Length: 242
Image (cartoon, rainbow, N blue to C red; front, side, top):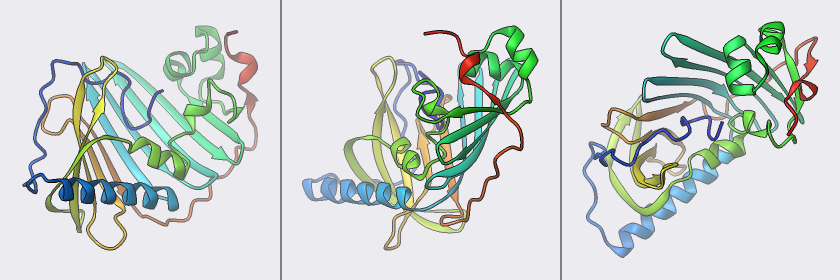
């Protein structure tokens, strides 16, 4: 799981860059500096508060939905991946340095990497793991506040777009790009609140294209109090060696 917000390798080199549907401010060195400053301020704001987000993505017949509530050291998320008729369901809870996950057979096999027998045995049971385990750390990266900021990373040149009302918030568009696994670039538009604190409201990757990803943020500053399962099975001993 490279990013909770995007399907790994989601966008092929043949996809054309699409406009974001807002009016761009004419380019200049001053405008580019302003856009970058606004973007960096949005990253700082994203890392500073808990938030609820819903992420959806589609690519080559695969659809992904992630619903999460973040915190500084705790949080939770539910993920569904639909590949044809196969549905992968995975719930993850973070409590300090311990993560817990529960999934159906398909998710335990395809996402976590358990064998078919183990996946059938432990389906819908809580499995615990240390979050400093390198192969498992990304399962909780989108649950920490710091991970939200990391997942919003995009490259310049940055440009400012026009304003747009999203879910009752007046937002300002910041445009950038991201590299795909094939080495090509796709456009990204990050909509942030237009006030003094530019909290992210929505991020759209490859807008107006058939293959796209959208993350919508709400309830900034919410209280997150996930509860650890009463019982769990250690996950690390079940993982394949190497």
